[in-house]
Length: 124
Image (cartoon, rainbow, N blue to C red; front, side):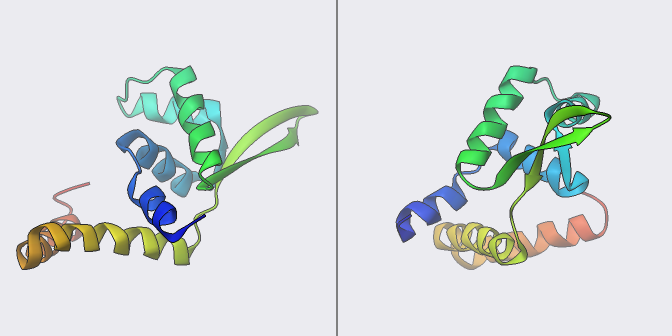
């Protein structure tokens, strides 16, 4: 993958994709049904088929992988995050750099304010 395509791929994570990545970050690995049930329990209105589409897209882009496991003598497909610490840092840095390119020091100050609010428990 060219550097441009890789950078674009890291920046083009939609809100639903980000949410699914967040669920897998919490769970480590999970079948689609568990991910879907969790999202619905948090008030997310999403169809199961939409979730499967998002999971397949994230697999194709290399952010997650699916593997078949055997549980209670049944085969089950589980999804797991493939984002290591290096890639996590790269994703965060790319997003911060875009904000700074767009808004300069004001963008950096806003990032600091948001991080402070999160640390104080005022934002999720």
